[in-house]
Image 1 (cartoon, rainbow, N blue to C red):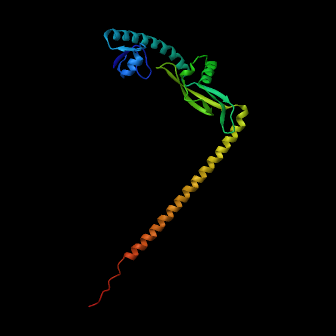
Image 2 (tube, rainbow, N blue to C red):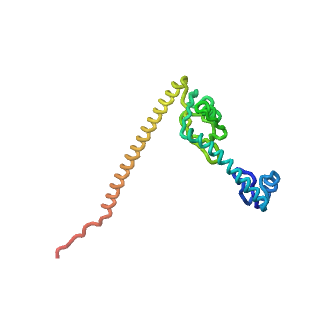
Image 3 (spheres, rainbow, N blue to C red):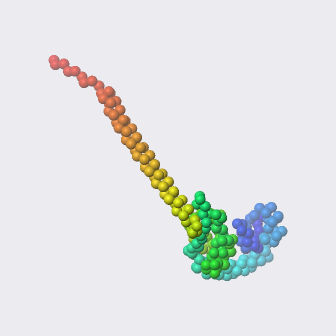
Length: 212
């Protein structure tokens, strides 16, 4: 069924769009709720009017959001957290934590639902995170999580252990590579000797000549 949309439907259409949708979706959801209607001249006129109104509203929102984007794009938000013996955080850093920290440090109120964090941060380090102010305006910020004062000794021990393990792994890899190279060289040498022996065995005996 072809319908014209009076409202935005995320992932499907925006107000004013004319689209073909499944009959059941239209009859059971869109039409009863007034989200869309049959494509008729009055409905098209109404949808176009709503689309123009929405465009003005969106432009205003984008303009306001652009001010925040200019201030926050590239901004770094730092956290200190307690770390366990495995290097993971006790607790986590959530979108709500980030929004609160941003407001405290910049005075900008950010809706935590617009902070696109797939899952809470549970490890030390840096992570790039997108803030979506509106559908058209986004900013990229960096979240850094460092150990708190009580956890610094644990982290130093973990990093020292990781460095030792990395060194041991590198040495083992180098030794394995050297052994493989040596084995290949020996195999090539044996192949060369075998080829020479085969060539000698295959040579015919020299013909005897008889003086007339």
